[in-house]
Image 1 (cartoon, rainbow, N blue to C red):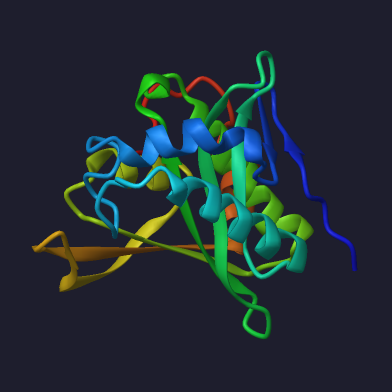
Image 2: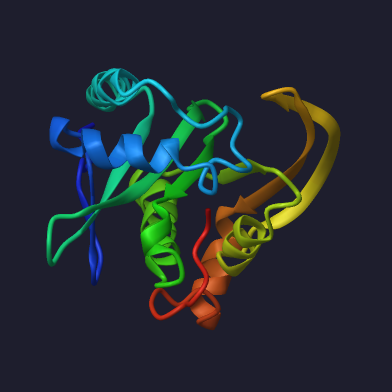
Length: 198
Protein backbone atom coordinates (compact mmCIF):
# COMPACT_ATOMS: atom_id res chain seq x y z
CA UNK A 1 0.00 0.00 0.00
CA UNK A 2 1.26 3.48 -0.84
CA UNK A 3 0.67 6.22 1.72
CA UNK A 4 0.64 9.96 1.28
CA UNK A 5 3.94 11.70 1.93
CA UNK A 6 2.51 15.22 2.08
CA UNK A 7 -0.34 16.57 4.20
CA UNK A 8 -1.89 19.98 3.59
CA UNK A 9 -4.03 22.10 5.90
CA UNK A 10 -5.48 25.60 5.67
CA UNK A 11 -2.11 27.22 6.39
CA UNK A 12 0.47 24.45 6.48
CA UNK A 13 2.23 21.77 4.47
CA UNK A 14 3.54 18.70 6.31
CA UNK A 15 6.19 17.05 4.15
CA UNK A 16 9.37 15.00 4.10
CA UNK A 17 12.42 16.83 5.52
CA UNK A 18 14.76 18.34 2.93
CA UNK A 19 18.24 19.93 2.95
CA UNK A 20 16.84 23.46 2.76
CA UNK A 21 15.45 22.95 6.29
CA UNK A 22 18.92 22.64 7.78
CA UNK A 23 19.48 26.16 9.15
CA UNK A 24 15.99 26.52 10.60
CA UNK A 25 16.07 23.02 12.08
CA UNK A 26 19.37 23.72 13.82
CA UNK A 27 18.18 27.10 15.11
CA UNK A 28 15.07 25.49 16.60
CA UNK A 29 16.96 22.67 18.33
CA UNK A 30 19.73 24.98 19.54
CA UNK A 31 17.17 27.19 21.34
CA UNK A 32 17.18 26.36 25.08
CA UNK A 33 13.56 27.50 25.39
CA UNK A 34 12.39 25.06 22.70
CA UNK A 35 14.51 22.27 24.18
CA UNK A 36 13.63 22.93 27.83
CA UNK A 37 11.53 19.77 28.14
CA UNK A 38 13.07 17.62 25.42
CA UNK A 39 14.74 14.26 25.99
CA UNK A 40 18.09 15.71 24.88
CA UNK A 41 20.00 18.96 25.52
CA UNK A 42 20.05 21.85 23.03
CA UNK A 43 22.10 21.13 19.93
CA UNK A 44 25.57 22.68 19.77
CA UNK A 45 27.05 21.21 16.59
CA UNK A 46 25.58 22.62 13.37
CA UNK A 47 26.29 19.41 11.45
CA UNK A 48 23.73 17.63 13.61
CA UNK A 49 20.91 19.17 11.56
CA UNK A 50 22.19 17.80 8.24
CA UNK A 51 22.58 14.32 9.73
CA UNK A 52 19.10 14.49 11.22
CA UNK A 53 17.56 15.45 7.89
CA UNK A 54 19.38 12.63 6.09
CA UNK A 55 18.26 10.07 8.68
CA UNK A 56 14.70 11.36 8.80
CA UNK A 57 14.32 11.46 5.02
CA UNK A 58 15.59 7.87 4.73
CA UNK A 59 13.21 6.68 7.46
CA UNK A 60 10.41 8.55 5.73
CA UNK A 61 11.05 6.70 2.47
CA UNK A 62 11.32 3.34 4.23
CA UNK A 63 8.19 4.16 6.27
CA UNK A 64 10.04 3.39 9.51
CA UNK A 65 8.77 6.63 11.03
CA UNK A 66 7.53 9.98 9.76
CA UNK A 67 9.11 13.19 11.02
CA UNK A 68 7.13 15.67 8.97
CA UNK A 69 8.62 19.10 8.40
CA UNK A 70 5.94 21.71 9.06
CA UNK A 71 6.08 24.44 6.42
CA UNK A 72 4.05 27.64 6.19
CA UNK A 73 2.24 27.26 2.87
CA UNK A 74 2.17 30.97 2.10
CA UNK A 75 5.95 31.48 2.38
CA UNK A 76 7.63 28.05 2.41
CA UNK A 77 9.14 28.87 5.81
CA UNK A 78 10.12 25.95 8.06
CA UNK A 79 8.17 26.21 11.33
CA UNK A 80 8.94 22.96 13.11
CA UNK A 81 8.17 19.26 12.98
CA UNK A 82 5.63 16.68 14.05
CA UNK A 83 6.42 13.00 14.15
CA UNK A 84 4.68 9.66 14.00
CA UNK A 85 7.08 7.04 15.37
CA UNK A 86 7.40 3.75 17.29
CA UNK A 87 4.75 2.30 15.01
CA UNK A 88 3.52 -1.14 16.09
CA UNK A 89 1.68 -2.38 13.04
CA UNK A 90 0.25 -5.54 14.61
CA UNK A 91 -1.23 -3.53 17.48
CA UNK A 92 -2.04 -0.51 15.28
CA UNK A 93 -0.49 2.02 17.62
CA UNK A 94 2.24 4.67 17.45
CA UNK A 95 3.68 7.62 19.35
CA UNK A 96 3.63 11.27 18.37
CA UNK A 97 6.14 14.04 18.99
CA UNK A 98 6.38 17.67 17.95
CA UNK A 99 8.48 20.82 18.11
CA UNK A 100 7.84 24.39 17.02
CA UNK A 101 10.39 27.18 16.59
CA UNK A 102 9.87 29.90 19.19
CA UNK A 103 9.06 32.77 16.75
CA UNK A 104 5.95 30.80 15.74
CA UNK A 105 4.54 30.07 19.20
CA UNK A 106 1.06 31.32 19.99
CA UNK A 107 -0.33 31.30 16.43
CA UNK A 108 -2.16 27.97 16.45
CA UNK A 109 0.24 26.32 14.01
CA UNK A 110 0.99 23.26 16.13
CA UNK A 111 -2.67 22.66 16.87
CA UNK A 112 -3.31 22.69 13.13
CA UNK A 113 -0.37 20.40 12.39
CA UNK A 114 -1.26 17.92 15.13
CA UNK A 115 -4.88 17.79 14.00
CA UNK A 116 -3.66 16.82 10.53
CA UNK A 117 -1.11 14.31 11.83
CA UNK A 118 -3.71 12.59 14.02
CA UNK A 119 -6.16 12.35 11.13
CA UNK A 120 -3.39 10.89 8.96
CA UNK A 121 -2.55 8.33 11.65
CA UNK A 122 -6.10 7.17 12.25
CA UNK A 123 -7.59 7.45 8.77
CA UNK A 124 -4.82 6.85 6.25
CA UNK A 125 -2.62 4.55 8.34
CA UNK A 126 -5.56 2.89 10.09
CA UNK A 127 -4.06 3.10 13.58
CA UNK A 128 -6.18 2.45 16.64
CA UNK A 129 -4.19 4.21 19.35
CA UNK A 130 -1.75 7.11 19.67
CA UNK A 131 0.53 7.82 22.61
CA UNK A 132 2.70 10.71 23.80
CA UNK A 133 5.33 10.99 26.52
CA UNK A 134 5.89 14.52 27.84
CA UNK A 135 7.56 16.27 30.76
CA UNK A 136 4.68 16.98 33.18
CA UNK A 137 6.05 20.50 33.76
CA UNK A 138 5.42 21.33 30.10
CA UNK A 139 1.97 22.86 30.44
CA UNK A 140 1.89 24.00 26.81
CA UNK A 141 2.44 20.49 25.53
CA UNK A 142 -0.11 19.00 27.92
CA UNK A 143 -2.67 21.56 26.79
CA UNK A 144 -1.94 20.82 23.12
CA UNK A 145 -2.54 17.11 23.65
CA UNK A 146 -5.68 17.61 25.72
CA UNK A 147 -7.19 19.89 23.06
CA UNK A 148 -6.77 16.98 20.62
CA UNK A 149 -8.60 14.62 22.98
CA UNK A 150 -5.60 12.92 24.60
CA UNK A 151 -5.98 11.85 28.22
CA UNK A 152 -3.24 11.43 30.78
CA UNK A 153 -2.99 7.71 31.49
CA UNK A 154 0.15 7.36 33.54
CA UNK A 155 3.01 9.00 35.41
CA UNK A 156 6.55 7.64 35.61
CA UNK A 157 8.85 9.36 38.14
CA UNK A 158 12.48 10.09 37.28
CA UNK A 159 12.30 8.49 33.85
CA UNK A 160 14.70 10.84 32.02
CA UNK A 161 18.10 12.33 32.86
CA UNK A 162 18.94 15.13 30.42
CA UNK A 163 22.01 17.29 30.93
CA UNK A 164 22.27 15.97 34.49
CA UNK A 165 18.66 16.96 35.31
CA UNK A 166 16.27 14.21 36.37
CA UNK A 167 12.68 14.55 35.15
CA UNK A 168 9.43 12.61 35.13
CA UNK A 169 7.19 11.41 32.29
CA UNK A 170 3.48 12.00 31.89
CA UNK A 171 1.99 9.44 29.51
CA UNK A 172 -0.95 10.39 27.30
CA UNK A 173 -3.13 8.29 25.03
CA UNK A 174 -5.86 8.76 22.43
CA UNK A 175 -8.06 5.99 21.02
CA UNK A 176 -9.42 6.19 17.52
CA UNK A 177 -13.01 5.69 18.66
CA UNK A 178 -12.66 8.59 21.13
CA UNK A 179 -11.17 10.79 18.43
CA UNK A 180 -13.99 9.91 16.03
CA UNK A 181 -16.60 10.69 18.69
CA UNK A 182 -14.90 14.02 19.39
CA UNK A 183 -14.90 14.93 15.72
CA UNK A 184 -18.61 14.17 15.45
CA UNK A 185 -19.23 16.38 18.46
CA UNK A 186 -17.09 19.14 16.93
CA UNK A 187 -14.78 19.02 19.95
CA UNK A 188 -11.54 18.97 17.95
CA UNK A 189 -11.95 21.85 15.51
CA UNK A 190 -8.85 22.45 13.46
CA UNK A 191 -8.25 26.18 13.31
CA UNK A 192 -7.89 29.23 15.45
CA UNK A 193 -6.37 27.96 18.69
CA UNK A 194 -3.96 30.24 20.48
CA UNK A 195 -1.42 28.13 22.38
CA UNK A 196 1.15 26.04 20.58
CA UNK A 197 2.95 22.99 21.85
CA UNK A 198 6.62 23.32 22.55
